[in-house]
Length: 111
Length: 114
Image (cartoon, rainbow over all chains, first blue to last red; front, side):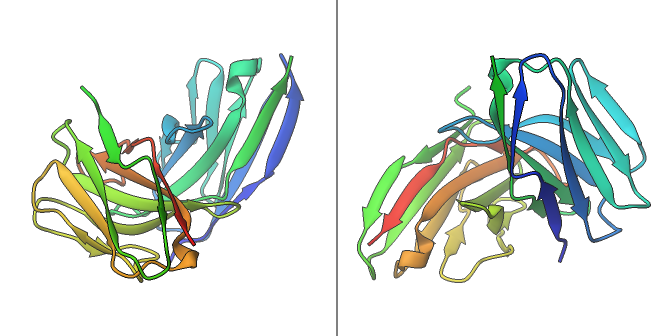
């Protein structure tokens, strides 16, 4: 099956700085890559996603990039705010019914 | 809309006991999923369902059973709980094939097996 690796496992940034989280995947057939944000005590919530026919997608302060050749994708958060503090998960899907998640990144934004 | 709800929120079991976790969604979604979340391991798919009356195995199905008798409900059963099943369990649903649609997650059930 698919194997998704995520780095770093923890990340601390000063408020206003940028944060970057990286994921790699193993199966070249994967074609959908969502990012989820999980706040303490809650279920994950989709924040942005990208399909394999697109190289980059942006939504306000959040962007995701995909490099199919290298099989990696990244989440970029600019102008970080304290409310961005959470655990972020990347995932990959082979267009079927199963998602494979990374191990998560705990982001702390220091005011 | 309540979205995805899970019952119960917390549960403590003794080894060998059985229990059922209930997931309900009011969004008329076709697909439903059960995941477990363990520290340092992310979310792993246990079982999923592509529609009423259907179920399929995910990445870590051993020790669990599921049923989808009604479209809005997806039940996860543990017949004989083991300490290795201590985890946080999340249910999710999506409107169509999960590969192209957002999954909506419930708030989770924290299960401890002693």
